[in-house]
Amino acid sequence: MTMSAMKSTGMLVAAVLATTCTQPSNGFVPPTTSVGRHRSAIAPPSTETSIAPGTALSAIRRGGGRGRRPPPKKVYVPPMNGEIKHDELRVNVASKDGKDESLGVMSKADALAKAKELGGLDLILINANSDPPVCKIVDYSKYRYEQEKKRKEKAKNSKATEIKEVKMSYKIGDHDYNVRLKAASKFIKQGNRVKATIMFRGREVQHDNLGVELLQRLANDMEEICNMEGRPKREGRNLGVLMTPRAEVVKAINDEKRKKEREKKKSKETSLAKRIEAEEAKKAEGEKELKLINDLLDDEDDDLFDDDMDASLDELLGKSTVTDDLFA
Image (cartoon, rainbow, N blue to C red; front, top):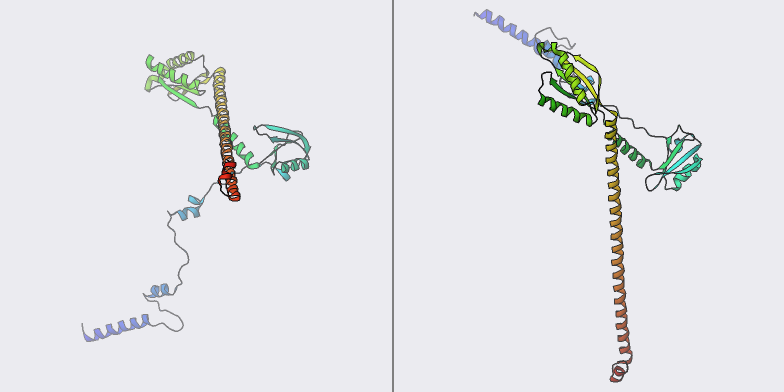
């Protein structure tokens, strides 16, 4: 490279450096390759925060994820005390045995006074449609607890009827058929509905009349405990029919359920009576022991009093053979 070329190259580099390192007073930056760098240095920092599209915060902003909560469940609160709008009421109060005792018809003011007299209880509207409306004097927290307990017990006892299913082929053997018959009878006696299904494979569908005969045979074998709902219906390649328990079977199931409930209630009452009797016996035994201890303490007090009397006489008269012979 010649000297003139080197000088021209050096002058070009110096011009470029002077252009990038100096900035005019009017703020104008020449359009060079370093303009982007100057602009990024001058521009204010961004206040927006970038959020990854898969984070929980982004899901919340979209309206989903953990931010969405179900609406609170509304709890029905019956009108009570000053919220009752009726002037004349039929008032009941809970007795010690758990049954309601009627206090008769009275005005709202008298009912509120009676509730206050019985220990600051609440006057709760039970039935607003009767004439006059029925109210009950009870503690609201206790009333709510009892209602929730009844609701759970009712939901437990009123179990929804399930549909059980037994499946078989139209070529089923006697042993396998008896197994299906036993299972279906068990389901029916439990109060459930049974769906009997005959399955066909391939060209076996043309023998659907044999499937109908098999379902009819099953219904005849269980005719004492169930009824067949309508005629068998085709469902694709299968053939099915529903069987429901007879009324007497359902009645027997309900009677057995009520019998168990009565036995359970009776056992609870018996256990409660035994516990009360045991507590009373323990209390009587404690009173007996306390009386015995008091009697022993009284005897000790009498002995101490006699000893004190003897000591006082000795101090008063002094000890001598004459006094000893006199009081011996």
